Image (cartoon, rainbow, N blue to C red; front, side, top):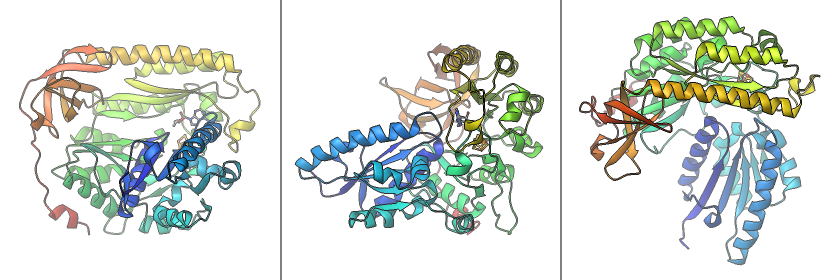
Length: 467
Ligand code: 5AD
Ligand code: SF4
């Protein structure tokens, strides 16, 4: 057993949680906690939970039951383990978690993880700590001193949070309640965090936020910047090869952002734009604040700006009151768009959200059948899209060694894995690949040219540009 304390973070749910887990690990590293992939050997175990879908809460309690047994077993070996719950279930359940699972000593909501060091220290001193309070006014504080920034990169591609929370209040969604109202980080902080990541070898960043295209962070001159303006600024950083953003809301997909896809080469031609349903009646009940026609118009404008643009979406089937015809409208919308990939969900009532109290909840068997039919369609579309890449030349950003000797794996602009035979020095650069074959979800190909941009060292100048 080594002396260093160890933390194991198990994360569920969205990219925001992945990001939060990394920030917690980075912060705790400063307190001497090394990260471990094995819960058994950890001194601190953090469940970073997701509340978005069905039975989320019960799943957390059953996971906690398993951890309690593991903890008892560790104790017999003389190791004491502390269990913490973070994320959106922590936010929603609060002290109820400690009441139902007394082995948990710390409950921390997503708005409060910047205090994780202090909270862990208090819990280590024997206190049962619950920190889920955040006030609307705190948002302004958080903008000045938000979540811990990334201090360590883990590879070629990294997430950078640019905004959090949501004011849209879709009637099915817990996010406005668990993540609070919409708030954007300042341009300066985002540039600084990106620069830190770039200096550690990152080449691609994905700007993340629940409503990323509602971004309106303070710029260095004191006025708010839009997402496309931020992207244009980031694109000036020479070491940064690729920029992505997720998740967008159709309401905030304006001309400036669409034009950024036309004008900024580093911005990848892949747009995750959830529509949820193809029926105007259901979109209205969902409070999505856009129609089917408006959504399709955005897709058309984006394709015009960037003909090689591909799309993905989230869909919910079985929303309360969804008829066969509403569902057919969803299928026809998907056929009209032709997606490269999608996430599909059965509606699940989230306590506290308006739709949970709507009448006409759809029976489980109908939800399952609709989900199956939609997934069948989406899988066929994904396969067709992947096949359409065979015979094409695509730019690939190489990330790591592949499974086979001599193989390096990268990603296409559409996030498909692309393994090729190449020297390991290619990692971190973009090179053109001729795609010869589709194998499951991977594009098999060969290099057609030397890397376009070789990895360069960083200049400190960028860091200070806005400091
Ligand atoms: N039921 C089913 N799916 C949901 N999502 C959000 N809330 C619910 C819910 N109550 C899905 C939406 C969202 C994605 C992140 O999760 O499709 O875009
Ligand atoms: Fe949830 Fe709707 Fe906000 Fe997305 S836009 S986070 S689905 S409330």
